[in-house]
Length: 571
Ligand code: ARG
Image (cartoon, rainbow, N blue to C red; front, top):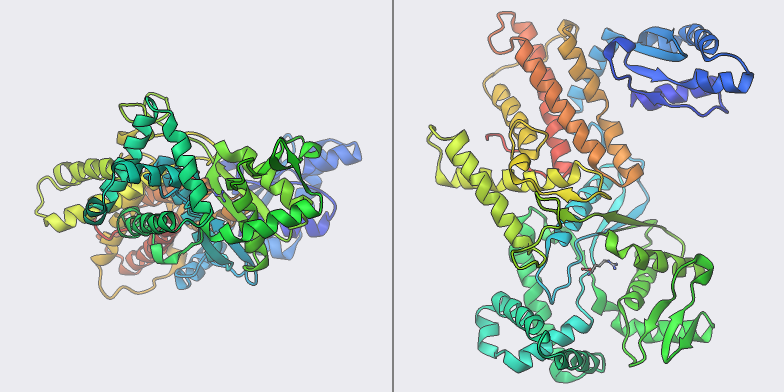
């Protein structure tokens, strides 16, 4: 907030210069620092130190700046440092406190629609840990866009079409039966999936069988369509009843529109592309040449006449722009699919379906503590539910036997805390890192209540909530009483909340917000440990400090909620 304001303010004097407003590593160097003198020195052939002196002297005369900063000072080799006024901070705190439930929200997105596509599992297979990352990152990004006033469509592009369904139908016809499917649908589907892939090793013919069944499905074979519908139905139920609730994702807010929904649009799409010479035949298949983009050709139709993942994505992209009027589409999908999206975006450009900004929000793999890709003992991808169960079990152990070892706490509450803390640990561990990087699952670190972890932030919140709960009839206090350096630090940090949110949208990442909340927690804990609050004899000062705590607690809770993490009042 202040950073942006300061930059705009300086830019009024130097409209054509590019420079940054930085946060100095040490408080002694001020609250903000500007590198403009280096830019000016280069332009004017002078020294940064000279320019810095001149700048500081000039800006010190500005009345608006003088209201906010008590000192503007040049230091060698040429930085200009800005020191906030205490009174200014105190005034800001009162404002933040008053509008704490909406502080950081804005309207910059009003009138714009963004589609955040995330999760998007293939429903003929169990949902795995890659989809967990997509779900966590996408859900949080959607929250952040919403906070800035965008209309957000949370799109779940279910993988409900394609050869994998042929495989499942083949497996069902070979080994499945109605009763099993009816009585224990999820296990039955899972077992069929596993058996098909196990038997494939000794019986390669199965593959063509799967393909045959898919072809029949694409040609509207009645029996296969019925089976497909049943499988889809059951899988969606599992997602809605078990999977999404277990990771705190509100399934009602998801817009399910998957690959199969484009099936009947593909023929027209393909015919048009062929007619306009955009697509061409190559060895019996239909492709779009992308050589001018330095990319391999995109495959629209295989030689056996079946369509592909790419074809359906193209149809869906058109739909999203034309019928949903998206201004921006984010695809939160693992970086293994980078080429696919480069091709998709290139074709969109060729076809002039370019009414929206298209972004592939990629993310890396999940690694185990040994630094290798996380896998089951048999070397397979880890099912999402296993991860969720494991973190919750561990969280339960800590909550029950460490944190509440000597307290009587109901079983229900222990379970509830373990659930929230487990999911919080999982989400924060993901979001605190830059999405492109591979993330490591270090279970103990994720659950370390005193480390840079979700549980630490949740614990800090609960601690603040606990303090606030103890006082009744608290008055607003008098912000002029907040003069300790630890208090100033917290007030300054609070000011940065809106910027932390805006950065998420600018970069389509969440690690900045996660780091912000971590630092806010550190500042708040340090403040609380350095001054008296509840046992202060000066009631006015006590109330003022409680005001500060209330502002921090609200911002912390709202920040955690943006990341999809629950803030419990008691941990
Ligand atoms: N269903 C795909 C998978 O699990 C991800 C879909 C990504 N989104 C898209 N529009 N292609 O790998």
